[in-house]
Image 1: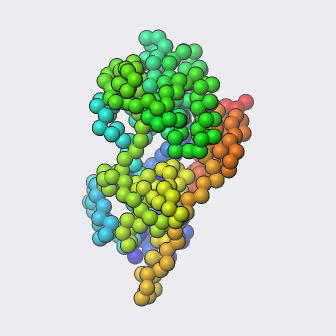
Image 2: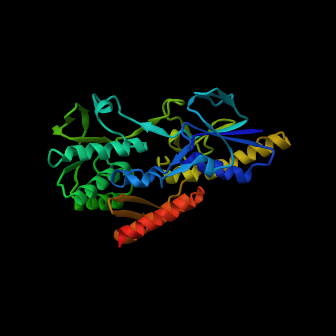
Image 3: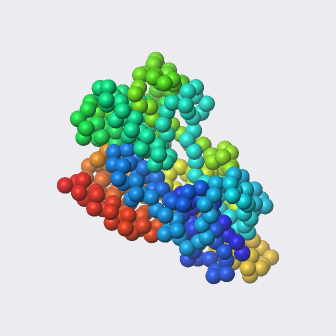
Amino acid sequence: MHVAVLGAGYAGLTLTRRLERELPPDATLTLVDASPNHLVQHELHRVIRRPELARGITVPLADAVDADVRVARVKSVDPENGEVALSRGTLSYDVGAVCLGARTAFYGLDGVREHAIPLKRLAHAERIRREFFRATDHGDPQVVVGGAGLSGVQVAGELAELAREEGVDPEIVLVERLERVAPGFPPAFSRAVREALERKGVEVRAGETVRGADADRVDLASGELAYDVFVWTGGIRGADALGERPTVRSDLRLAPRTFGLGDAVRAVDADGEAVPASAQSAVREARTVAENVSRLVAHDREGGEFEPRLEPFTFDSPGWLVSVGDDAVAQVGSSVVTGRAATALKTTVGVGYLSSVGAVGNAIDLVSRELGRQR
């Protein structure tokens, strides 16, 4: 019995570690990813200001799992037949999970792909930092961040803190097509996030549409906006191996023996609610899929006339967190928390995740840095 997990982001790594505990000893488990390392994506924005953090948010897969790790790019997946084309060979499986994450969506906007910097990899964070410092050589830089979801909020906040530390006075403009920042989240949370950004000196332009860009200006519906640094966090699209993000229902299945989870898919839970694309969602989906993969494996080994009953996924978030530079905003239940309490909560969540994937040393380092920063 061969089980394959495609992708080692939040969903894939969490799923693999759970399956290592739950699958029978005679099952073979393979984890495939284009990189030999897992990147803690929700801390990536920190590298813009603190490049030394790159090592702390990078977890070698060989240290995190005992499964067979294949470093290769997934080129295509046949969910019905359990066949995978890789950049290095092929792979077949009896039960599989597609956790390939998502890529930055540019929506065909003229010039945006060519001129904006996304934030998906360490190289992106490092490039944003380089471009910011290059711009400061010629005075106070003009920065435009397109997209005010959580990633855009964190980039704008981090750049504002970097400017403060460097003694420069940039114009940082955060542009959002919808009417509020963090538009997919509760209104009280969104208001607190906007207030935190504005305290940092970030200009928020909500209800403003990006139509395109060239090497010097962003074309907005209301006119042109000059920039020295242009960062784009305006949305996500599916991985190339799947095309557009397919929709999965509460069993999270793409096919009878293939699951889809994390940002690779659009999930609708057992209550009929759309599941937000987030690390929290991916980790929670992985727990459900681990249980269901185990049930399918047990059924295939033991036989039986009827398919096993699968556990439906229901997303019930305890709250939301976002960094805004050295500050943070948290929503727990109906309460919105800011300041040191929110920052401490975000550190706790980060430490908990790192510990859950076996990166205890990274977790200890994170605590040390955060405590030092808050003194």
